[in-house]
Image (cartoon, rainbow, N blue to C red; front, side, top):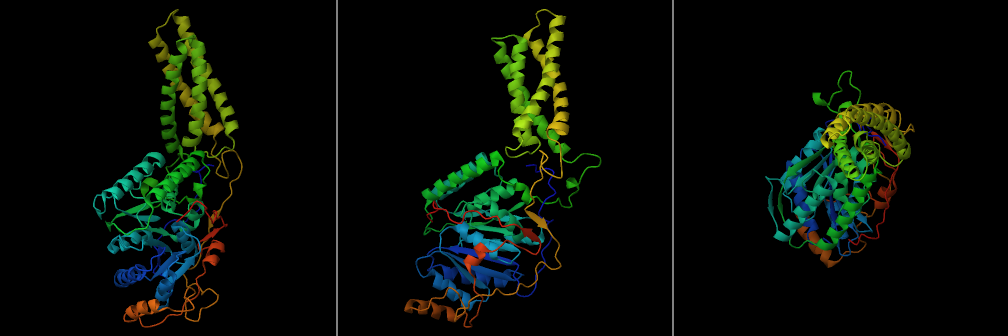
Length: 512
């Protein structure tokens, strides 16, 4: 699948308006599992901070990952007392599953999440979401590994975190510095197209989302944060690390085979003059030239090594033919994937057949050069043969690029490189007011205003209420938030129309 000629399916980034009354600009999700002790303190502190510092309307959503304690009742109590708080309960564990469910149902244009322990200083929240609101970036992450970050944690977690990010850089060529910091944000229009491509439902969800976004060319903003380790964390380090390594292998294999349709996430360029089209230069020519030169240089070295090896036990013509054949197959495969952006196995055999025709032309050119050299002298030196072959290969390289671009991998903007039309999954349609107030969802109402409130109340719950009623003594009746509706609903947005593309909703390997 070609990506360089894709017109892009995401609209250009724009500054988000303040939004209509009742429609939050920011939705902060707090995924929790058995956090009855810390949940209330976390939500109250976050709510007070946003009320004091955040200039836009906001919402706090507690996503309960099948807790077995009283976490759901604490979340329901918070929902009934704070107008900006909502709660959602999932019957399956997994942080990625919780974020996917809540983010897919949210109407806020900016979606964020943070860990319940509030290890990250909340002063970084506004700098985290500001680039998304302004239209500068698509995703934003907090980084504990930036130079200006201040981090307090043990040597064991420090080693694991830095080792994991080194693995990502070495295996997936990730350029972001911190994949697992529980402090991230994403624009909703990006999430609607990106989340269906993310398969993981656990702790690797963050990494997979960032890798795919980066490979698709989306802009990721990093914010240095102050972070203090939570010594009571319930994360199983060994099991999480094992699952993460499996995820790295799965994503790396998918990227290597080109099976991910990352062109769905293409964005039009902005106002930077360096991003504007050059006059009278075919689209993608500059990038293709650079890629072809790099592949050509490596192929030439590979060819010379092969020729020297074959020449030790065969004649010059035979060595040249075999070396050129093997290097030509490798050159065609590399240019197909890296230079001309053709992904997947479709048309690979035809491309190799056409590449062999180009190989035949190069063989005739280089063989003719050797024949001319042998006609000029009966026993030419090996260094002279190499010099003649280098000159002949330079001429063949120019011809090969022209044939590759015009014949083997032609640029067909109305479809893929093999002439078949590609399916458009997302399309941009203008809307008069994408952030207009959304009418409330219809559904059952609990008599006490929260779908997650328990029918009976224990003395333990009353003790929590007495500490909370001093700050919030008013009740708030809210519409029911149903996780099942969120999971089954068709993806939609005022600015994006998408076909439902859903990953498997259950991962038997996820034990969290």
